[in-house]
Image (cartoon, rainbow, N blue to C red; front, side):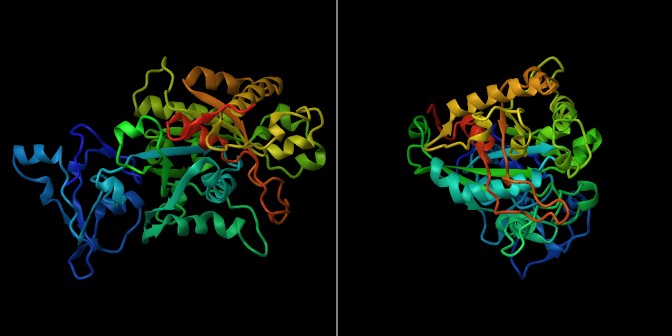
Length: 423
């Protein structure tokens, strides 16, 4: 019978509701049991759903002493029942349901055409193939939930990203994420998270707080917010509640949305690029607005959540003579052997902030310093080269550069990996 903190709370990975586990009812999962329509879950997904097992809320009832006991102890889950979120009624991941491990919500946001979908697809593949061994952590697939029912994050990843980037005959870019308004009720709903369990090696204080643990596990929930929704404050506040619960924020910014940079491109290159969609600084304003309205942050206070400002499509910097000097850290890939490369990250962040000011775009640096306590600047390339503009096919196998730097920086800020200071 696991012990609980009487004042602790968990976060539902699907609706971002925070609650004490004593409030979580059960749902029957046996094949032979009675079923019922669940109007609460149907409202969350915005579509009719197949009947599911009946909800058992008897565990929530009882006298004062029984309710008080449930604040400290959680009973073993019955074999034919599973805990669900009291707000959206979706199944909770096993280790959240039993109070064993915490969760990290990473909100990755950006304007349309900022390269979010390609970034997601290459990042998650790179975490498995390279960085889990380089930094020393394990990444495991976890079941998430869509309107059709439970689905593994591996399968959802393949549907959203892998089938495009990993096509063995004709790899191509990932289609842009659709607005939640049009994709609600489908597997493409951007509110459906990819969920992974990460297991990190123990650090100093873990030997005192978790002496019997071999590794430190944590759930990682990643949301791919649609760029067009980021321009609408009302849509963000209604459908993107995960931003308010984020333990880390990543702003993906297309530097070529800035006229000062785009004007320096060769006409042959600029003609292949899509028209400017939105001022990247506006997306920052929208996220700050959500924190101020939904989490009641005062307008004169900075947001304490670690925040990464990431310039995408860094491979195109080479196409502009004189924009960046040849030996700039923007053109060097990073190494994170055994931990986050703190020295390299700080060097890159300083370089980028100086360049952004020179590129006639100082507003972004000012917004970072005035709205966030803890922030850093990054530059990444997910594909390594621009795709063919007509067919959207990749001209080569993705060769990412610095793709995991922002996420590893957040892991370091949250205390899961150490930092190194190699020069």
